[in-house]
Image (tube, rainbow, N blue to C red; front, side, top):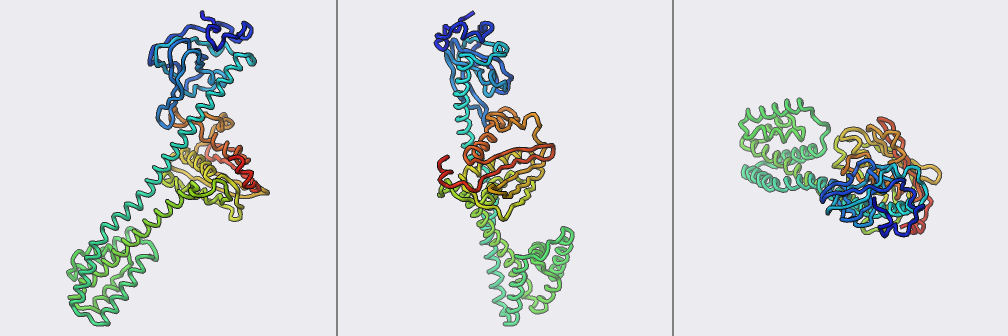
Amino acid sequence: MIDLRQLPLFSTFSDDELACFTTPGYDYHVEAGAILCEEGDPPRGLFVVLDGELEIVKQIGGEERLLAVMDRGSFIGEISLLTGMPHTATARALTPAHLLRFDPAQFEGVRESPVVDLLLRTMAERLKQTEQSVQTHQKLSALGKLAAGMAHEINNPAAASQRAADQLPAVLDAQQAALIALAGLHLSAAELEFLQALETEIVRRAARPSRRLSPLERSDREQALAAWMEDRYIDNAWESAAMLIEADVTEAELDDLEAQLSADALPYALKWLETSLTAAELIRTLQAGGARIVELVKAVKDYSYMDQSPVQDVNLHDGIENTLTILGHKLKGIQVVREYDPDAPMVTVHGSELNQVWTNLIDNAIDALNGKGTIVVRTRHEAERVIVEITDNGPGISPEIQSRIFEPFFTTKAVGKGTGMGLDIVWRIIVHKHKGTIRVESVPGETTFTIALPTTRSVSDAAAHA
């Protein structure tokens, strides 16, 4: 057996001070590459490195991250030993290593001793280092998710705008050709006036349809219009019919058009109307795509408080809405119900950090719903507080762990899927930084996080806690 006093760490300890070890440590040898304890394992005991090197790694965001390299005299396993929690990281031998192993039972009942104090100090330092590493990764991961989400959200309007821009030149060429052909037929002023009025009306109707046709109604009306045009030997009758239906054009209107124009002019008039409708639709697509991109960029700027003071009076609803916009790509299949208090006052906060709170809570709700369900966001104000409630109708949080969900590194997700820092960060931002409160109530089918923020806090007080 090896005496712990051989290690500089314990060289000044007396027999009484080492009395918490009811039995000596066991010699423990591992080869390079061997796993000493794995993240998620129950407590394996305390290990003291006598010789060799081991690395401590943690799964964060699906990737293995190096937290520390342990050499002679280092502790391994003290966090799980003292907390009873599963190991928060994996210890792997970099070289053949010789260790002392102490079983968890050897520390049962021991509450006060220099060794326990040393273990507690070591645990605190280790937790701090791990927390800093995880928080750094959390920020980078959040930034990556934000970028990926925005790329996904922007891609749809950008792709639609690109397709519209690609199609528009050919449509305008066809429209111009039909117009030139009509000009060559020397239409009368009355014919031109009728044709222009009809074009103006159907373009207006296409932009603001009075109602949406059912698939069956649409099919019947397309068939009727196509048959009308085929009876008059109009080329591409089905394509023209599909576009004219968008403007709710009827057979009666086509009869009026036929009555106003010569047989030679009718095909060109129909082509001009069809291309006018197509061009207007493509322009609307370009406008909608551009507006959506501008909206998304604005949401990101507002979400991050870019070019703004970090502490300011904010409308909580704006921050929540920006967060919902950012997370829009993950909300497919999920209904979001807003129950906002229109009279809720402004609050003095660190805006970007508060948005991190909404992101973590809403993202957790999305994960709980697994692609299907409802999230309800409520706000109200009472006395000198603004209350925000975020509720989902997912499976809920079991009563046994509800009291622990705000603890650092506590997670119910599989190893590598969750860091256990999201709700800890939420708690720090709400309680420590903004002097608010947060609580959770959960039963199967309803989980609610309730955040209360003071409304009387001054900017100087907020800045003092930055």
